[in-house]
Structure formats: structure tokens, C-alpha cells
Length: 300
Image (cartoon, rainbow, N blue to C red):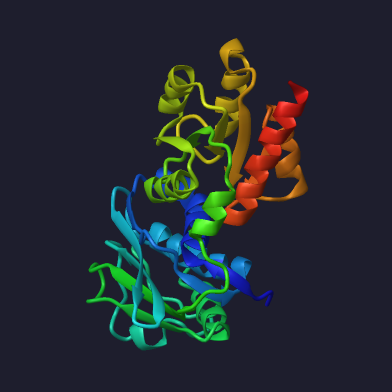
């Protein structure tokens, strides 16, 4: 594993982006609850994302169309606790004690092509244990839905802080107009709060249409734009913004859970000035904003 200090909220957000299409296809109502404060831990970002994705995939696949799935993240004592709960087919009492065992498979009322629980939950348990955590499964029986709980030890005194110290604020000698665009309300608001604490004038849009409307009215100098927006993705929003002569000086930053070379190239080709991979690190973002604005002032 590649161990680093992580905010578990960012891991959850990336897993949600990965599984978004599946929930939309099955017309599920997905409720997400994340804390306002960071949940710091030491871990492997890709492996932890795999854990959450597996749990969300199971919930989506084994919940009939139009069902409900909820995901919550909370701090409980010295643990960060992720709960994924669904209104799906449930787990029988004979299967429940061995649900995390390799190749466990139960009879399903859904399409058999989806298979059983298979190797996914075994991977979940193994990866969680490698992080010093535990897994639980709960169900009142077949047809009663399921709940999976992951507990991971958190850092009570993180080395990297997500807030800006008063000394760092003092270094900020210039404030900019910034528009944050993300359909994940918690993510958008947390980024906006950090920017405001550093003295910037910040507004937030939770949809593509609202972002286009506010960009013309607000005339931001910088826009942090989520790629995975529903209805109209960030690439299309960027194309429309670049066609607006009133926004010729706008600096566009892509926010996404994907950071491969092909993703960065597509961002550049679409008109983005920078590409930031979630979860967002405040110090890196602060340096990027300063760099972009310095570049703009030189060009002027």
C-alpha cells in the first residue's frame, strides 16, 4: 500500500463519482451525509476508494429500481465510520455470518447475471484490515435491506491541516473573485469556506446551468469547476464559458477524481488552465491560484 495522510471525505466523494452512473441507471435515490470537518487518516487512497466503490456497487446492484441507498461518514471516538445502507433484497440469517468469506453467493431475486456477493466483500474486509479497521454487515433478513459498516482508525492530530492559520492568511495580499461549481454541496461549501478564510470573495453554484448564469453576472476571475456534473458535464460548461467574450480572462480549474495523462490532456484541450484531482489539498490549491493570477498579471 502507498500510505499517505488523507481526508476520508475526499475518498468517499471519488467513489461516488465512480458509481454515479450505476445509481442513475437503476433510478435509485442516493442520500449522502458527510461531516463539515476533515476526517484524517493514514492510508492508501486507491485501496480505500476500492472499498467504498465495492460497497456502493453491491448496494446499487441488489436494490430494485427506485430503491433507496444511503451513505454516511462520521467520526465515532477514534474511528472514521462509513455506513452504506440500502432497501434491497437483504441477507438471510444463514448467509450473514459468512458474508465476507471468499466467493460467498446467495440466491437472488434479481437477474442472476449479476451473480452473488462474490469476491468483492472479501476484498473489502481484507483492505480494511490492512488499514487497521473492521467491517460489519447487518440485515433483518431477505427483503429487508442491508447495512455495511466500515470502521477505520483516524488521526487525532494530523500533520497536515485543512484550515488556514492566521500567519498564512496574513501572507495573502490579494483577494480574487472565485466561483466554486460542484453538485456535491458539502464539497463545494468546504472549498468555498477555505477560500473565504483566506480573504477571497467566493460564490458557489451547485449545477451547470447556475454556473453559466452566475459566471456572466458575477464575472469571477477564477472558477473551480467539477467535471462530474449531472445533465451537463464540466467539459461542456468549459466550452460554453470559453465562447463568452465577457469571460476571456477567466481562469478555469478542473476538479475531478481522475488524474491520468489522458484526463489532463482532455482538460487542456477543452480550455482549462489547470487540473486538480480530488480530494483537494488546500496548500496545493492556494499555490496554484497564486500561480495562475501571477501568470495573468504578467500577460497584462
